[in-house]
Length: 391
Ligand code: SF4
Image (cartoon, rainbow, N blue to C red):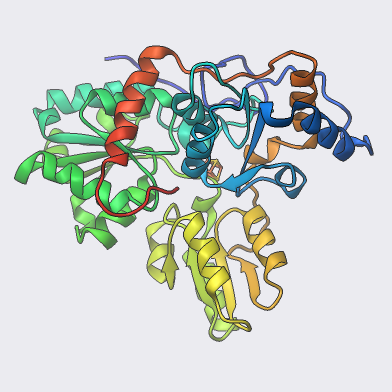
């Protein structure tokens, strides 16, 4: 068994280009104070014309979102990229795993660019391939690997998706996690188990609230402890083996703040993402993906109050776009997704102007073997019955 000791690198340092974790972005960036940045981005984009397609994740800053040809969650954006085979360059204003998914789903001739290589995802970083392979070895030693179907959330690196593809598993999003788990349990009969990567909260919330499992059916695999911190008996008794990962943004919301808001704002609706902790989700009125959150606010009656537990850029944009509703952030302190926010106007200008000059910077490329197996896992998700796949 490989010993894995992988503390997160400080963002913006290090040279591990194949990792989700922060890496240095080597660009010769324009100054953030340059008053012409908006005009420069617009001019470069106009020069590139149909050759470039800019994707903007819902959690991006407004200064970047204004240049997006389409906005959406990670899976919608990857599919939008795949639907533009004539675009030579896909500039992905999101994080590293999203650009990988776009590279997997687009044609080999298309080049996917991530304007800042330091835009990783702390959740995706929490499940590294060597760690997951160690866990699988432990499941094999416990005599249960044949009963386990690995399911990974879209928010994971390409090699984790490929691992699931190789081991008869699949990818899921926050809106089809229930269907994916039902599919997984049906694959292996009565003794089936799921290894859910990398977000323990989405796995637990879906298993308990959507599939009706007990909390006691879930165990948490800690990759930093020998044998995940679990005995072989605990593994054999579990139905859900949850990877000990979480989103550093959604993991911040607390049950205490929900209770405080309910006490101070009569009639407030609590609307949260399923990456939030179980005790927060239990106290919420509505739970769903970013697209669900957006659609819910759009359909809400004027005068209603909403406290939203998701990334702050999106909550601020919803508040600005819906002044007839009272919309607030479900936390006492400001918390943007720090890695998403690394994609700023100077990086976007640098990426676009470099393309105009004939240089492709920060291209994200997934190797052919990883791409093949990741596609297998993604296709199993697309073949799931029912709900539309969304993040
Ligand atoms: S919001 Fe959370 S899951 Fe999304 S990119 Fe940021 S850290 Fe990752």
